[in-house]
Length: 612
Image 1 (tube, one colour):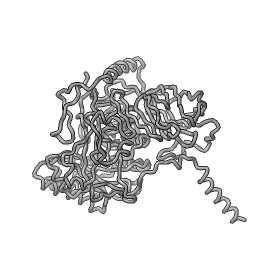
Image 2 (tube, helix red, strand yellow):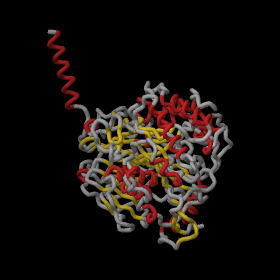
Image 3 (cartoon, helix red, strand yellow):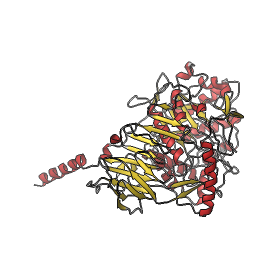
Image 4 (tube, one colour):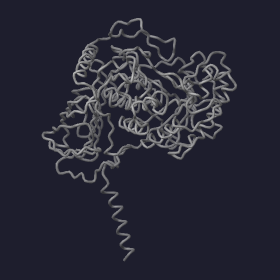
């Protein structure tokens, strides 16, 4: 009898897994796992499937330097901040992370690794990224101190050796070898893995933006010695090296025994001190590489370690840049740098960069779209020149409308209000946007996400309103907010046939007790997460803890409302808007004397004049 009972219980368990588990588990996005390798043609491939790698994401620096100190000043717990920011990266569909580790904060002058708070937070960050399915490339050596924009306080080997000394001073070289050995053999207390054996750390870039000069032989010898220090630990992951920072000695890097080379792109320069106005799309529709046909180059993998449309808030640059990277043969690209939510209100992380889902929603969604571009566009696929290339594959980019858009039968994303009809509304699985569309009419200024969990059951996530009140690219200070966050009740209308007009809304995130029903598809919502269900659909099996892709249904992260006088906010907002509306009507102006530098210093072109 007991045996029969056990068999019956086992049958029930298997039956419930097969038939009662929500469809959300079956629709979860599967990301490649395992190590990578570089084939003889210089293509980065997954070891298990042999398929080409294509990964796109961000740099992010909370464990170190100014970001670390700024979190302390605003009273934000570092681990909680990292957890929230990584959640947002996952919501944006990103799958790549890179950071140049501030070695100056985790070593002594001899290169010995120091077990301290910075290293612990890096370990925690790696563990959080792994949980979200985000792959990692670490750059162990940053080659500078930790002060910017404050005085330096780092005491590691990079505090006493300059970039020029790093590859010529014997003691500096020994310190770097010692550090690389210990860093690769460091065991992450959260993952229990050595850095060199973690399958989600897919490769290493030796150092960040080294500075070399001729002769070339000592450069090649140094690069080989650093790569060997990594491989001597038993690490078999690809080793990348920067070729963009010292183009005069590019032959030295191409001759080195490394698996890949790394580039950056800041096409309109850095730190203008104000928001740049005008149409910059013509300057990012191709990525020129002078030696792209050199056999030494074609046999190596290609990585963009940093890129950014600096001093530009327009949500149109990233998709073009991502496409240009794919055209040039890159398989990895990471924007620099995603602003931590806890300090993004003031944009003090790097004043020339400004990107955060809560504070720059349209620009953040343009990064989501850019990631889709990077994954859909074929490596080395060619495109015509601007403006003929404004519509490609499933994408449309419009400077005049300040709109980036992706439209497929399953996905519909947009960075501003659009009248574009979805290709096949009945097949949609994911929608995300700012503003309104034929699917969603929304009165707020924050981003929102709609994810299909099952037929007639969707998850809605609504971010608070983001209100810019200052030019975010002026000189930054934690005492000078540039964007305000408002938690408003906003009108929402969703037009999805399978939801109908009288769907129910149930709050899922902590503290969200909403229980209401839409009328003609209309409802009023506040920031948070909601479970939407068509009439007659049971949702009892969906809870805040239910897993979906790499998140839980009830997860939500957003800044608290800004405490600021309403009259002040409205006045600042109106003045900022006047400038923005004026800028949006501009055609491409005549060039000014400002130049735009590509990674290759001798390649410059005129940029548009900037509005005052």
